[in-house]
Structures are given as structure tokens and as C-alpha cells.
Length: 628
Image 1 (cartoon, rainbow, N blue to C red):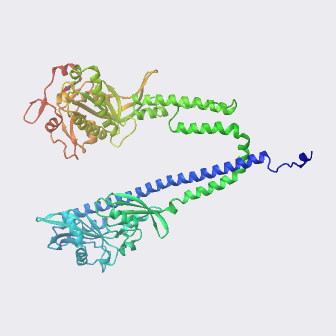
Image 2: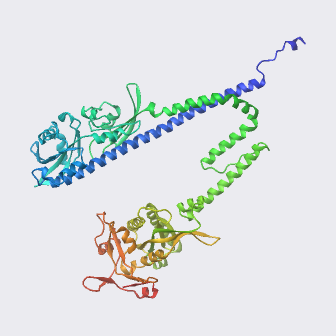
Image 3: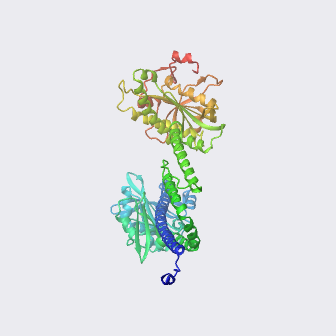
């Protein structure tokens, strides 16, 4: 009895002990979660900061390059008028040029005489005439001071240099090759104020962005005074890295005066130098640390309430729920083949059972989705599963494309069925890639023929241009595809393509049991008719007048004889596409095109100025068109 009476109940009963244990576990767990979340969030933020820093330096570099190249183009045009005049004041475009290029102080044409620069002609900005910029002598002197740099322009280099010390003001020297005048190489040298570029460097958030030459001397800075002082950043780690680096861009972490920074450089493409972007790590990750503090306060606030809930339901809830969380993570990774054994017959058991059913359904849906994409265009499949494709049809303007393999019947007769399928799959893979790269969708395969559209599913900037670009890609792809072919088992493949542009009805068309997304209309029929004309015309790519009207200034074409199409009262004008006008390798004539793609074609002269393809008897029997 005495021993019993000496027993004292502890202040820390089982409930308190459990609460202390659980609270400790919860606290440690939450603390670790917060630390890990902060770590990963900081790491993610660092990646984003670096990406943003690199993007800013790249965008600023592209902008600076665009501005200087545009300025160089304008100066060349101005110099071509200037070189024939003794006094630029008599030049009619003088005032207009300097109004548009108000930062340019001086433009001079120079040639090399021995070891010195000789001015051929020059012009000063009449709106900026001060004691530092009042006559051309000062600019000639400045050019002579930096002649060792400017001499490089005679060898084809573009040079940017800080010439501020010569003028006692912020001035950038800019030189680049001009042309030969009287068999003598000349260059253009100009001097510019960096005021506008300062705005470019000033508007980049927490990033400090500036431009230096290849030696680290500042060429552009948010503070123009840095340019005027010809401040050198050559000792800054990121600039040192830029000077010694062979790559075009890079990022480094460095410390300066006890503060940590992320530095990025992007070398200029048009001239020696680089754009430097620097961001302090404290500012970059300020929000990370703020979130960490807020998470700690929230954890402390809810800890006492959460402990009680966890204590009561820990055994019956946490284990199965954590299992479901793990399973959810697996599902998020794409693993749907998951099954969790229900631990109880209450709501948690129901949840587990429902979760298993959901995982099974997702697995079946993913398998169906994967199979669906193999038979339907991916964009159409996605929109269809989201319910964004309207039943019925919509009236849309698009470009319609048909292609067909020449003499496919005779080719297939010489091959086994398996060989036909194999070569068709190889051929279709290359052709479909060309369609997808230009924003088109394959409507259907009709044996060896392909039907594709541009603009039927979503509008494009120029549907017809995209369709013709795809056809030209097919032309080049087919030339590569035919390399090594020419035998009976591997015959040379030639195709004909037809393109028409117009309004169609686009949508899901079919029966209650089966629907197909396609386009129908007169424009589709005409595209099919045009494709079939490639053989009698000896071409590989024909377009209609409606298509030509959309791309007349983009492609080189040759007008073909008019045709009378079945169902059309008026004759139709069609054109053979030779290539893009901006393509230096574009065939100049239809004959060159035929030689390039290997089309053997016989023509008979109709008169001295026109040629017309022979009409085939079997074509006349089809009565789908008539060559006028």
C-alpha cells in the first residue's frame, strides 16, 4: 500500500507525451520542408534569374546590333550621295538624314594613304555644332588618333571605340567597310552620341546592363558619365571572363566588395565587344527569403492546432493518405499502373478505392490518347479531347495542297506489298515533316497522295506562303531521298504538287458513328485538279491564280497555259513555282527546274513565243480539265 501511495502521477501523461513527440516530429518535418522548399525554390529562382539575365543580355545585344546595322545601312545610302558632292550642305537629303539619325555627329568617307587616314568627303550634323563639334578637323583628328583600330575596317571589320577623351564629351567612334572608289578601298567613319543607347541600358529592372569593347572599355552605360570618362571594367571578373572566353556568351558567380553577383556576357556579332548584365544575388533572391520567413510564421501559428488533429487521426489517416500522396506523385510522372490496398472500410478506404479506379481510368485514357494521336493529327487530337472543335463546319480561308507520286502504279507493280508499304512510310515521313515545319496539318493520305491544309485549324500570317514553302521543302527533301535510288527495288521518286487558296468549310464531317476533321468546297476540288496538271505540263509544283495573288512578290513563277476545269465556266490561270525570289539558287527558268528535279519533258512549239505541252489521249478521256 505504501508503495502504491508513493506513486505519483507524472505531469507528462501519455497524451502530453504523444503531443510532445508528434509536435516535435511535426516541427522538425515542417522545418525540413521549409528548408528544402527554400532550397529548391532558391535553386529554381536562380535558374530563372540566370535565364532572365541571359535573355536580357541577348535582347539588348540584338537591339544594339539592329540599331547599329540599320544606322550603317542608312549611312551607306547617305554616303553614296555624298561622295559626288564637295559640300554636303548642298545635299538635298542632308537635313532629313540628320533629323532621322540625330545621334550621328559626323559621317566621313576615308581612304588609306600610307600609314594615315585621308578624308575623301564628310558631313557634319548641322543641329549639333558646338566648340567640340564645329568642324571636320576635330573629327579627322579623332579618327587619326584611333587609326590603328579604324584600319581594321579596310580588312572588313566593324569597329566600335570610345572617343570621348578627344571631344571632352561622351562620343562613340563607329567604322565599317564602304566600297572601292577609283580602285581604292574606302571605309565609313562616324562619331555618335550614346544618349539613346543609355535609355536601352537603363530600362532593365534590377539588372545593370552596359556594353564594353573587347578590352573592357565602356561603350554604353545607363550613366552617360561612365562613357565620357572612358571607364574600364577590365578588372571585373565577368568582363575578364568575356575577354578570355571563346564562346559567345556565358554566366559566372563572382564577389565584389563583399557582395555577391551573377554576371552574364553576350558578345556582339557585328563588332568586337559585348553586352554585360549584372544582378546582385540579394535582390535576385529577396522574395525567396521573404517566403521563408512567412512560412516560419505560418508554421508556428498553426502548429498547436495541427498537433491535436494529427494526434487523434495519425494512425487512421496519415499512413493511407501519405500512400495516396506518393501514388499521386507517381501519376504526375506518368506512371498510372498503381494500386493501393485499402486499409480500412471508412471514408479513407473509399478514397483509396476511388483513387485506384481513377488511376486505372487514367491509364486507359493515356493508352487511348497515345493510340489516337497516331491516327489523327496531334493538334486536332488535343483540341478534340478538349472539346474545342465545333461539330459541323466553319467557313475559313486556307491553302489546300495535294501531292501525288508520278507513275506509282507501275512502281508498285515491280515491288512486293511489304516493300511498297516500307518505301511509302519512308516517303510520307519526310513529306509530313515538311508540312508540320511550316504550320500545316495533314488532312488525309489517299494511297500515295497527300492532302494537307494551312489555316484550316488556326489562322496563319500567310497560309499560301507557308504551303508553298512546304512544297519547296518537299522538293529538296525528295532530292535527298532519291540519293542512292534508281534501281527496280529502289526507284527514283518524282511527285506533283498542286496548291489553291480560298474559302472552305472546315470541321468534323461524317456520320453519327464516325467523324473526320477535313475541309470541303470548290477550292479543294480545284487544288486536286491543278495537281493532276503537273504531268502534262512537265512541272512539280503548280498554283492557282488565287494563290499567286497572295505570294506574287515572294516567289519566282512561270505562267502556264490557261485551263478549262470541269465545273468552272471561266478559264483558270495557273503558275509553275520555280522557287523563292530571295533564294540565290532558285532556278531562273522552267527548263532549269526540270533539270534540277529530273523531269524529262518533251515540248512542241506552238509559235515563236509560246510552247504548249502535248495533250495525252488518256487525259482527254478524264474530262476533268482541258488545256486551252
